[in-house]
Amino acid sequence: MKAKRKGPLFVCSFSENAINILKCTPLPGERVLKVEAETLEGTADQDRRAASALVRAALSRLGFRNHPFVVSLAQRQAASRFLKIPATAPDEIERIISLQALGFLPFPAEELAVGYQVVAQDPGGYAHLVVAVASAENIAGYLEVLGGAGAKGAQVVVSSYGIACLFSFLRPSDTETTMVVSISSSEAEVAIVRNQRLIFSRSFAFSRLAPDWQDGFVDEIRKTQKLYLAETESSPLAKVVLLGSDRLLLEYADTITKGLGIPAETLAFEDRFSFAKDLESVSPASIAALLGLALAEIPATFVLLSSSRKEQLRLSRARANKIQTALLIIGILLVWLLSVYKALENKRSRLELLNREVAMLKEEAQPLEYLKKHLRLLELRTQRRPVVLEALFELYRIMPAHAHLTSFNFQDKGELVLRGQAKALSFVLMLVSELEKSSVFQDAQIKLKYATQRRISSGEAVDFEIACFGLAQD
Image 1: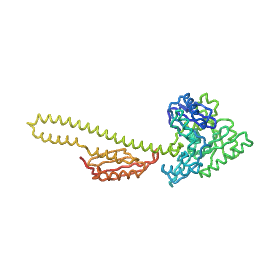
Image 2: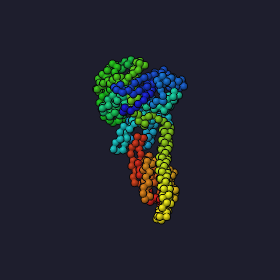
Image 3: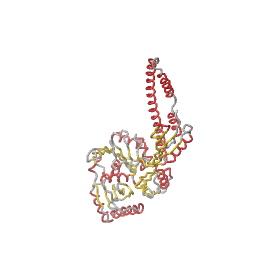
Image 4: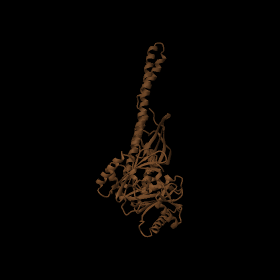
């Protein structure tokens, strides 16, 4: 789960009375990150311009230069659920989650920011997901503060994912179902991890000053366990792990073991990081989620985005695919034109040489006149507009928006082979239909050789090959 990153990454969190900003720089060796920090008094809910000014000054002191930026959204500000839905295609998953999310928080769909991660897919066509839903207004406020400070394009991720990532980094071979707990002075954030994956999360408030606080703490852990089992119908907990090396954590672990009969232990992580002096007054446990996010490779689908922002990104990807297709065709065209130009130059040079030889040998070698006539015909033919160029321009005109070519191969006897990729099978069939209706391909036999669906990093894609037989040649 550790991200392969060379440069610094900035991570921040917004609480009721402070903004924590970490600069995490990769290090070689046992200590994996150099961690520098700025803690600012104030919140994003107050004067956002003033908050932006404070953040801008802090980022300047930390040497921020448009580095990647991640916001850790406190678990209490989000609703997290484990879902099993009858879909595996990204578009279908998005559609179903958008409907399901309306039941998580009392807001209309346009005011919700939703993120999800696919935990598993079963043979029956069901996807097992962890879904996080938060207020789009709150997230927009945080991004506005950061944007005003010059940190644009920040990703917002629920904090429990960072806790799960930190545990998976510290215990890379641990596949048991484990409740990982990060405790601050008045709150506990819980992430349940199995096979290096976050599968359930929640948070709860508590106070050690309350009478019988141990009973209240154990009750919350028990409640978390019951909610997890009811929602996921998965295997029971194997153990509880409390992040940090504080001596008080040993008391918490002992309380859990005695109260629930589940093995509980502490897991120190401070020695894996090089903390700057400005972190001496900050409890490492309070920034465990931030450190985990600095180590994580965050799935694009788990970033919290509003429906309007997702639509903007979808349109942006569609434009990028269209531009990619256009650039591919232009590149092929330029390479082809260059090869044609070189071929013409070579033939022209050869013709000039042959013409000189024919002039010298005309009186002695009449048969060379016949050769000259044929070479002249060849020269005229190379000046005509080839059918390949017509085909390229026609393909550029009729190519569907969600399909693009990866290979253009014009073979002997007028056979043209097209290979490419589309977002769905419907766009491949649309291309076949357009080819059959095209005047350029009217004399050709169009055949779809294959169309294979596969998963890629951004979702599903269909690889295809189309053959055009009997294309007219000049």
